[in-house]
Structure formats: structure tokens, C-alpha cells
View (tube, rainbow, N blue to C red):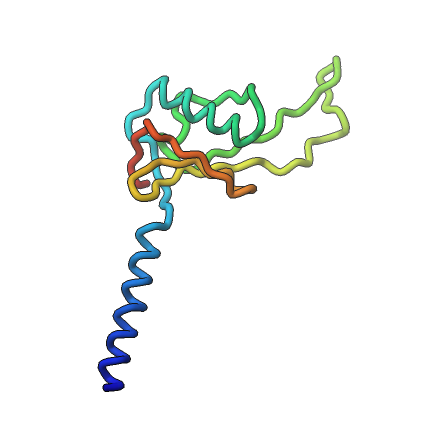
Length: 123
């Protein structure tokens, strides 16, 4: 009787691990990049940053699932950096795929936005 119980318990644990791994988001790339996907990604990044003027390349998330955004350095009238140098850390984002859906994750805050009309492929 104990043997059956342990086999059943082992099976449940294995099933739980399998179910968990299927729901974990995985790194992805944009499968069919175009101006619409670039606009959607830019809007999502702006929303996650609380900004309105982030500029992204047309090839964002096409060759890498990571996006790194550095704060624009402020300069004086002669082109010198104000306050010495920029000490802020870069902001990073990941394009992920979870259960067939694309999502962008702000890596510092862990906030996500799903890209419902964008096709992704696993990286």
C-alpha cells in the first residue's frame, strides 16, 4: 500500500513540475517585424517607463530578446555633461513568450505588457 502511495505522490510531483515549466515565460524574438510591431513595442515600453518620447530602432527584439535603454545625458551649452557624468543604471526589458503570447517585461519592476497582435518565436 505504501509503495502505491509513494508512486502516486511521485507522479503528482512530476506532473506539477511539468505544468510549472510550461507556464514559465521564455525569451523570444519578434517573428515578423514591421512598422506596426515597432509602434506597439514602443508604446508598451513608453507605458512601462511612464514616458512618451522613447525612440526605438526598427529592429528592436528582432536579433535579441533583451533591450537596454540608457538615460539621455544632459549637456550644457558647450556640450559638457552636467553634474559630471550619468550615474543612473540602464533600464532593461525582455521580450518573452508565455503560452503562445508575446509579452514585454520591465526587468527592474517586473511589470509586463502583453503584445496581443504581435507574433513571436522562441529565441
